[in-house]
Length: 95
Image 1 (cartoon, one colour):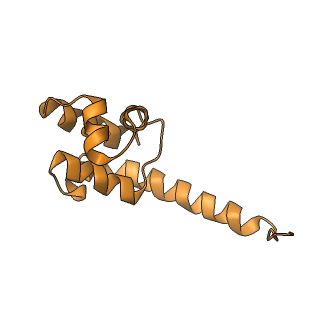
Image 2: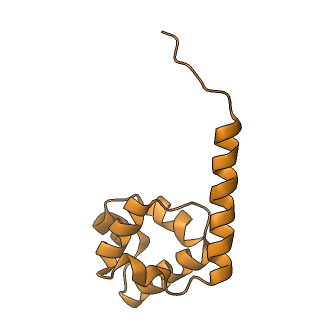
Image 3: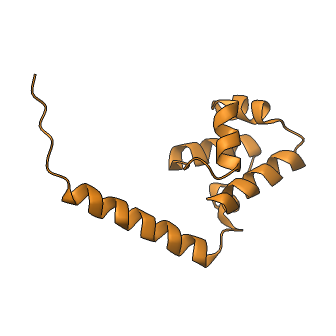
């Protein structure tokens, strides 16, 4: 999600934080913050909340710039992922 990452970057820079500082506040690695900001890494709900808290905003504030098209793309990817997982044969753990 490049738009979400760009929003996080903008808010981080407005607060004059480095990626390392934001990572420390959110208890995440600075490299992870960079990957998220560039849209190269998906963001879990848990980490979204950590970053939002570190920026002193609500998680929903980070989503305000995400367009409806971006949300449709996200939903489509999630559905495709779920369909692939459902189609995979069940894996059994054999000790």
